[in-house]
Length: 253
Length: 249
Image 1 (cartoon, each protein chain N blue to C red):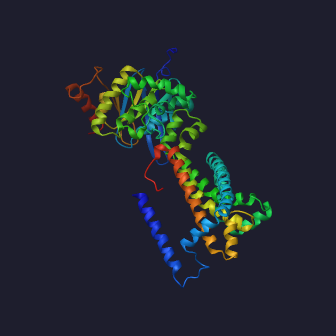
Image 2: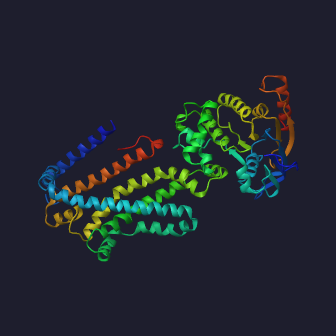
Image 3: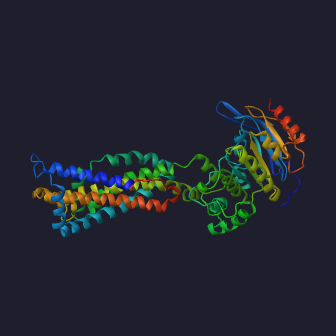
């Protein structure tokens, strides 16, 4: 799948000078971002800084007013939709489907027959700590489990780029901490190019290789901070605290 | 407990009915007592059953027609926005048509047979089914539709995998309303012109001053509606197990 080296189209994900306006409000202004192969980029910013807009632009659910978006070389909205997988904040599992069928939904949307989609989802349940919950309905699962199923749904189509929109924002803090560890482990097993949007600086520093800080509306990238590559990260270490402090300072806190 | 309360209230109602009916000031021709009604049910059992069978067929076929037409129409209106905008006022207007007036015209148009009864049952059942299903199809959260779009789902895939299952409980709500009014529709149809059916039997009994038979017919019609309602509620429990909550009946 290696294409000739012509930057920046070969980057899995690149945004060039993106501006997006809604009537009187400018949500994003002149945003440049690049995510490298198998890199996790966290985007943090205050509420209303256009984080979700950013994800929808990349996911091909919206078009920018200015600038260009490229996902695995695809620039058209439909092609972008086909090149990345989007995980919303709420799990949005279908209550009438069991966990396995929910995880298989994205595959079915691509035309994989139902039984085959379920078969492909099955081994992942074992690997990602959901064994024996294949036939549970979402109402029978805890919030953390539901989010795992939603993540498997995102992972299964095998898209190169994953877009995670505050994936743990709706969970309590204990569940969130364990889910962050789980996600770090899952991405170590299944490396992907990830853009993670969050309002939680600690989550960003814990999970990401690099943290981009957005300003309040209109959203602009005000800092890009590299995180030390050592994993698993120790949230109590001084290095972790130092990176976190830099991110908080960039946020003006 | 639930059932005990319902049965208790029913018993109270029957006792009150018996009490009022035995008052000397109430004309026997106006009100048959529960005991007289029971006697009529026993004495006229085969006559009542034959006619009840006719009415039940009208009700079931009419319901089936309106369910099929209503489901098809609701899905079409949901998929084609212009059709919804254009047809919605007509749909509401269809429910405002005074069926009592329309019934004789249907009989003129479709003759004495089962045709006009089906048309009337279908006409009054069509509205609750269509409107409820349409609401159900539109009840899916925008976030979920966005997710489906991001997963590359086609319009039909979203309809089949998300919108239709989400709308099922709404469809059953509409079917419950339809099941209860369908019996009234069949009676109107028979009043306008019929040679068999419970509605016709009740009308005839009225003219012939056979008040207990009239009440027996009314009791059977009511039971029919309640049984249909219960049947739909039961079907809903099996069809939408994820949506199970405490429900009457």
